[in-house]
Image 1 (cartoon, one colour):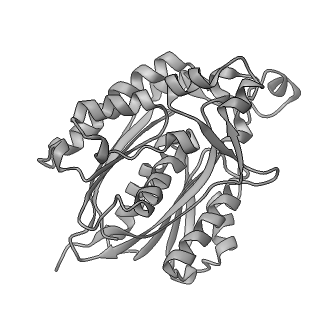
Image 2: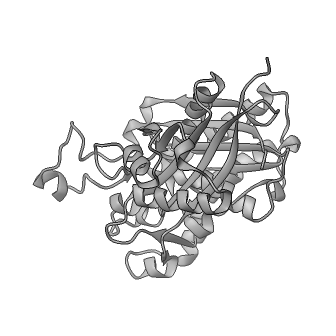
Length: 330
């Protein structure tokens, strides 16, 4: 009996209409277009409309997928949603998406792994498929970061955008799909990147609101240092574990948090520019959506070809980080 692989058979994306560019931010906080470009590589970011939530964006991304690939939502077995900006604590964002898209035969759940969320979700979905239990899994990365961003804080408001992207992971006996993954976690990172308010430790009160505890906090230097080291290390680790070198990679899609972090990974693996997908200038950091957005953009640009080795690596709050290696089948 042949081994069952989990492969991506359909993709879709959604970005909100409103664009907030660096020049707009110059009018809001003490910063400049040149400073943002130089330090981050970001130029513009999309911002959700009032009342537009993570489930709404994910639903729109699924509709994009359905138009592209004629997907029947009733054939979906499972929905795994990566988000740190759920519509509400409960029910899950997966439940809302399931209802919106008509996937009445699917069950689902959310996972919270910050910017590593999509690759965490992809690895979980892979296990459900490889064990033979399910045939079609919708993997979602959707974050409305504008909802938890303080636009008076120049250290964080320049960094984030809103977006959703989805992939359909499907069982196959062909030699395509997810080849390997490595997921990691270090809880010491809890002190450097977090949102303190709103949970059971600090439920919403006038005090938590006054103290701006419902916004992202980031200790930038510590996060940057850890990200530069760990995302590069895990990318090299997964290649070595599979007896591969950077030259074997068809395309590398890194989490789009900072151009300098991406450059460090690229240099460590000795990749050429044409092997790397960078769209941070268009979207900024969309958290769980960055990597699947990169997949869709690369596919649309003709940069992903059947049989290509695709490497995806991410780093996020927790700290979380990891890599996924797959052979592309679309």
